[in-house]
Amino acid sequence: MTPPIDVIARSLVRERARTGLSLAEIARRAGVAKSTLSQLEAGNGNPSLETLWSLCVALGIPFARLFEPQAAQTQVIRRGEGTKVVAEQANYQAILLATCPPGARRDIYLLMAEPGADRVSHPHPPGSVEHIIITQGRALVGLTEAPEELHQGDYICYPADREHVFRALEPATQALLVAEQN
Image (cartoon, rainbow, N blue to C red; front, side, top):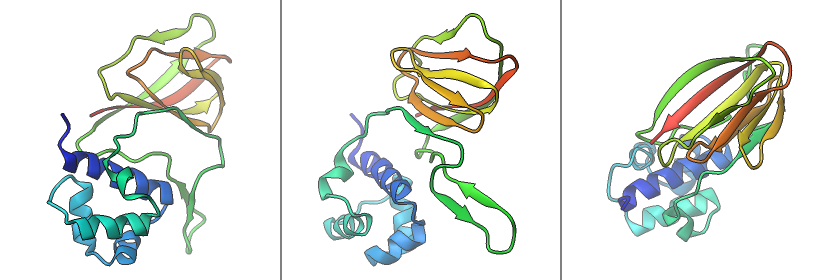
């Protein structure tokens, strides 16, 4: 069984990412020290009811959501969509596609594929997640029962502990794959 602080930590990270707000801003809104929130997101500490309640108010979520482990699900972000952060002094912007849960391992791969046979992957260990960004071409990607057609610049995230597929739809299709295991 997962310790409660681990579930709380993942929930805090997930919900803060959902809001698009910084750790410092959530801490300020909740009236807690930034270091306290950082420790809680790392799965350390023994937070009081008051601290957790304040964080829920700052995040705009019901208290019970902190104790609900979220099942991995497919997420697609099309090129140019998502929460953007823009630099003031440079022509530079960043779009957060995914956060890494505390204690997770991430491996990064460059995929190069040609149309033809599908790459069907059997389920990986429980809790595995894959993130893919198409960098060139088009592909059908995701869970075998519900793959998504992705174009250059599109992002998908799906639970890799279920059967999944990658099918190149154009010659010289390339993608960046980030494989994550807890």
